[in-house]
Image 1 (cartoon, rainbow, N blue to C red):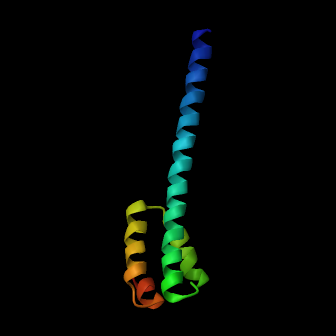
Image 2 (image 1 turned 180 degrees about the vertical axis):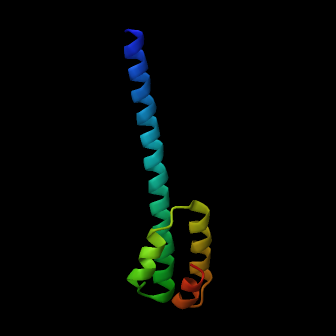
Image 3 (image 1 turned 180 degrees about the horizontal axis):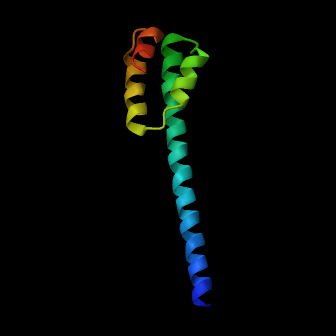
Length: 84
């Protein structure tokens, strides 16, 4: 294998690894978003679409963890939504 071929292969392997890592991270974020919405639904009933879209737009794991806690502890959907 030539140097150029090895470099190309290395680049492919790194690209594949990065893609897998990004996919896992995106999957974790989606699971956390779902957990927030499920907690709200179980506690308060149907979640308005605008609120579901707001949760879906969050791409920060610590923020989603805090939102999940607030979803569980909130006394109403309005109270939860005030903290967005």
